[in-house]
Amino acid sequence: MSELPDGLHEFLAKAGWGNADIDPIPGDASFRRYFRLRGGDGTGAMLMHAPPPHEDPVPFLNVAEWLSSEGLRAPEIYASDAPQGWVLIEDFGNDRMRDWLDDHPDRETAAYEGAIDALVELHKRPAGPFPAYDMPTYRRETGLLTEWYAPAQELTVDAAAYDAAWEEALAPMLARQNPGVTVLRDYHAENIMLLGDPADKAPQGLIDFQDALVGHPAYDLVSLLQDARRDVPEALEAAMLKRYLDRADAGDEFEADYARLGAQRNAKIVGIFTRLYKRDGKPRYLDMIPRVWAAMERDLAHPALKPVADWFTENIPAELRQNGGGKIT
Image (cartoon, rainbow, N blue to C red; front, side):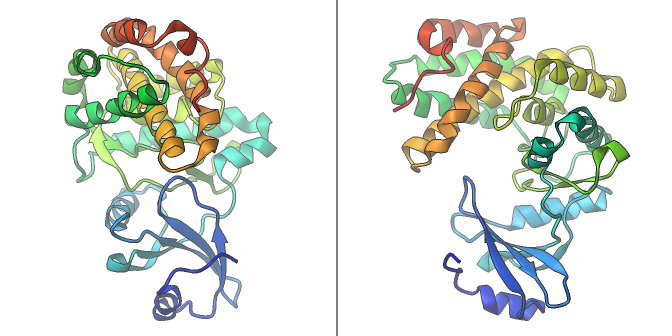
């Protein structure tokens, strides 16, 4: 067993779980750690440690409370000590959508239909009390590509023109995200817990939503259907986008905005995954960049992205673009 954080046993004792068995769960790309608990009576729970100053569990608690109040399936909060970074929550089990689909590939369409329908329900609610997904935030995120990917490829690029191209491409969309919807921002197959067989219309559990903002309804669709961590067939992406459009009052420009936010998110992810390797020594994310890059290239082909596509043509060599962003060393 890996070393347990200081204060864990004290928190569990106060929460009434002092005698629980503790099983650490491997982490991902953040400072958060998770532990599965099993009580002597067979009951289970999940313990999240999001220690300040690197993490802050308060946004997670706030978004979980809001989602639950709106009838959506966030984990129940059993106990928390935010200053110390501890949150004890409901255990949704082991069936992450991504892992479950590895074992049940014939149920892929049903699983994605459930995920789309959950977004439709979320978007029917007025937006939660969260910060706005505004232009400075969009541009800060796209800037990760020029900040991390370009230097990793030893490219000299025009960063000012890059920012201006994104401003031109995204500006027409901003009015259409007012008043906006709650955007979970990391809504994909690794953050959806299946609480039963999706073919039976079983509910899904939401996790990893602490960075929620108020923005455009297309963003979480992009996150789901242009998944950085899992191949989503283009035919399935198209079918699920149509399913959303058939069930939501999306507007005439929705598909153009979907392309805008697809390119925006994928540019951000290329930068983040490069940073995870170059700064944090996590090479496994490099294997995902070609998938992300391919989706970004499809998005850039939309006329709404012409200013950004022109910048890529002028600043990123064709051999890199045609090779999934190229090898990063």
